[in-house]
Image (tube, rainbow, N blue to C red):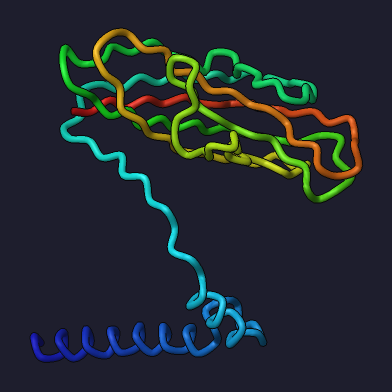
Length: 196
């Protein structure tokens, strides 16, 4: 009986490995005819800049959940606070703590007739953007779809002593045909995890 179990496990492993080899042979991208082009692009890509934001033992978790819709209009250059997506959190007596902030919710972009418009999402601590974002002020695109989607993004930073305000903001990027755009958030959650 034991011998049959071992042989069955070996056969199962071979099947999994064989399936993986087939997927790799197909280019790993749905069997695209451009597998070679994709491989060339992967090998010539520039290494990403990595921002390390590590913490230790968890000290506190705060969650704010809103289950009513929030709609907003396009306001160029304006960061719009997402109602209810804010918490105050105490920093350590000395040194730093790590905050991991996740924002999730149903989203929808309305009014767009193009393909380059999107709803932005950013998290600020004490009014200052936290990673990921760029020095140019680029924020994360959480949705560019006119259909309802459940989306999520995670941010991270360090905080020092004192009480800090964590808040999620949204905005709309109108890059296409200068439509009158709107955004929609519903059933959204702000989750803040504090660790050593």
